[in-house]
Image (tube, rainbow, N blue to C red):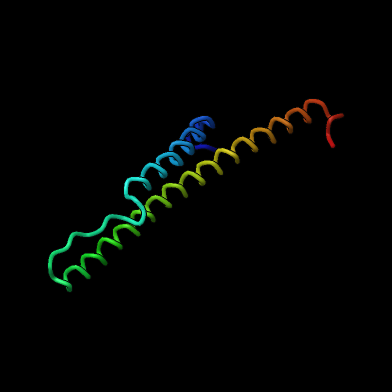
Length: 102
């Protein structure tokens, strides 16, 4: 049972498409290979700052990949619901006309 929740197949497809689009937009916010950190005049500080900026860039790419992963999961959910609906319709058709049973 769905527990009172109604799944709308079209909404799943829309959500999958939106997540896919937004992951690309999010990824494009930070240019590849990322911004150059400013120079402070201190080599030690500049090295640390570069490491921090690089880490932020990598986290940004990971978040973009996670958004795309959610898009893929939503698409799979959509496809599963469509397949199940088609299978149920075929079953009902066969039950109502036993000569169609293969």
